[in-house]
Image 1 (cartoon, rainbow, N blue to C red):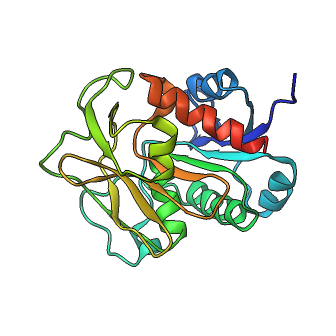
Image 2: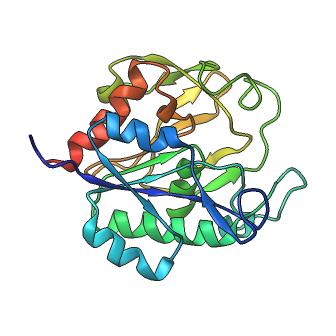
Length: 234
């Protein structure tokens, strides 16, 4: 049996209160369980930008998790809209450094929900600060059930992985990628045109998806996580 690849998995951070009287990290268990099921060995990464190089020296791939917070619009040259919610600058700074470091090393990377947005911003993209109308992207039901369909772009890396022109996804986001930067390709959209998946051609594996494949609601989610793990072994 081959060695399980080490997959760096980013954590969320919370202020004092609730679980602990001091600041604490948090992560839903299904992130780690999904990566284990796919054949990987998840490694949780505290938010230390100065340790990004040390982390990446030892990792075989990276997963940027989602979270109930927004990226500071100043990072993509926009004023903050009223609909923009809580910011977590320390987490965002760490994840931007991690994404850029992984891209420099051609290390397999998967961005999940907010992680897809981090990938876009790291490359110079911009975000829609709040989605209104069209498909219900937020509050459309529990995350362990399909919320809507997305159309996969033929010929994309995502299409080769999921082997379908349309897939069902869950949905919990209120922001989305507005303008992808050069070098970043859109590989799926919702019926209202909202970007649902992005990828960077030329990288071993670099995809971002607006849904949460760690819930594994369908074969596409399993295929996406399996493809990430398989790429780390090449």
